[in-house]
Image (tube, rainbow over all chains, first blue to last red):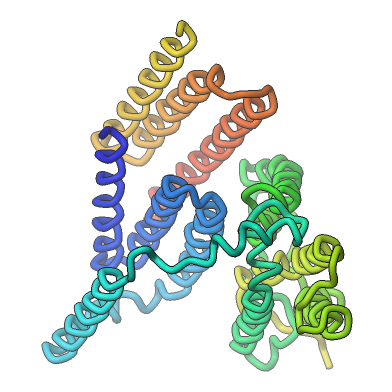
Length: 315
Length: 95
C-alpha cells in the first residue's frame, strides 16, 4: 500500500517534470528539468528491479546527456532571446499539437494492445546463460545473444563523434576542441579535480569489472571515467587533447575494430558472425569489453568537448 | 528489534532534515541562504539515513560502500555549493 502510494507519487512527479521540461521558456531551466527527470526515471528503474538500466539512465540519460545539453545551452545563449521572440503561427502550433497528440495516442494504443502475457525470450536466455560464462543476464544478452546490437551501438558512437568533429571550421581541423578552461589553481574546482579522479577511476573500473556478474558494465563505467577526465579539463589542470593525435584516433576506433575482429573470427571458429566457440565465450567477451572501454571513454569525453575550435597544426 | 527501532528513528530524523532543507530552499530569499539551508540540512539528512541503514545491511563491505556514498556526496555537495555561490557572487559584482 505504502509503496503503491510512493510509486504513484513518483509517476505523477515524472509526468509533471516531463511537461515542465517541454513548456519551460528558458532553455537552461528545461535542461535542469530534464536532468532531474533522468535521475527520477532511474529511481523508477530501480523500483522495477532493472538496476543495469537504472545505472545507465543515471549515467548517460541524466548525467552525460544533461551535460551535453548544458553545453548546447551555453552556445545558444546569444540567440535565445531572438528565438523566444519569434512566435509560431497558429497553423504550426495546431500541427505540432496534433502530431504530439497523435504520437502519444499511438504509443498508448500500442501499450494497451500488447498481448498478455507479454512475449519474452527471458525463459530461453536463463538456461543458456551459463554457456556465456557471465552471471549478469544483461551483460550476457548484450554481448552474446544480441552482440550485433552492441556492436552497432559502438559504431554509432564513433559516427556521432565524426559528425560532431565535422562541424569544425577548416582552419581548426585537427586542433583542440572547446575553450582552454581557466580556473583558480588553488580554488575548489582544482581541489575537486585533484581529489575526485583517483576515487572515480577506481569506481569506474569497479563498475566495469562488476558488470560480468552484477549490475554495471562498460557504458556506466566509461561515463564515470569520461566525467573524471572532463573534471580535470574544466579545472584547467590539463588541456583537451588534439583531435589529430594518432593515438587518440586509434583509441577511438580500436574498440569497434576489435569487436568486428572477434565477430569475423566467429565465422571460422563457431560458424557464425559474432559466434563464440564453446568455452571461449567469457574470454572473448572480456576482450571486447576491454577494447571497448577506452574507446567509449574517449568518444564520450570528446563528444562533451565538442568540435575542434582552436587553430590546428600548421600545414 | 532494537536495531530496527534505531534504524526507523534515524531515517525518520534524516527525512525530517531533508524536509527542512527543502523548505529552506523554497523559502529563503537569496542564493547564499538557499545553499546554506540545502547543503547543511541535506548532508545531515543523508548521514542520518546512512547511519539508519547501516544495521540493516549484511556484511561490512556493503556498509563501507554506504559510508563511501555519504563521503562522496559530502565532497561533491560541498564543492558544488562553493562553485554556485562563487558564480552567484560574480554575477552580483558584474551586473
